[in-house]
Image (spheres, rainbow, N blue to C red):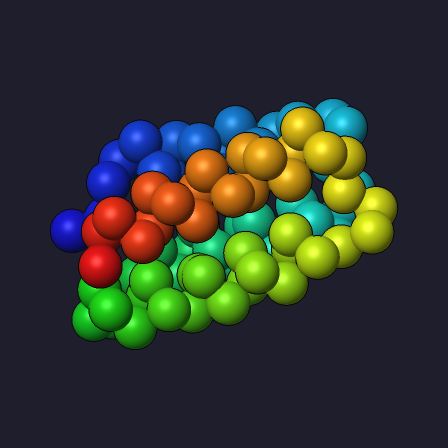
Length: 79
C-alpha cells in the first residue's frame, strides 16, 4: 500500500502556484498511478520514471527539485 503522506505531498505540489503547468500535469499523472489498483512495484516504477523526468526539467526551481527528490526517496522506501 502506498503511503498516504506521499499522495498528500503530491497533491500539495500540484496546488503550488510556482510550479509550471506541464509539471503539475505530470504530478497529477503520478497521483493517479499511485491510486490505481496495479501492482505496487509497477506503480512505484512508473512514478519513479516520471519523477526522474520532472527532476531534469530546466524550468524547475531548485526548491521544487528538492521536493521531487524527497518524493523519490519516499517512493524508494516503499519498494
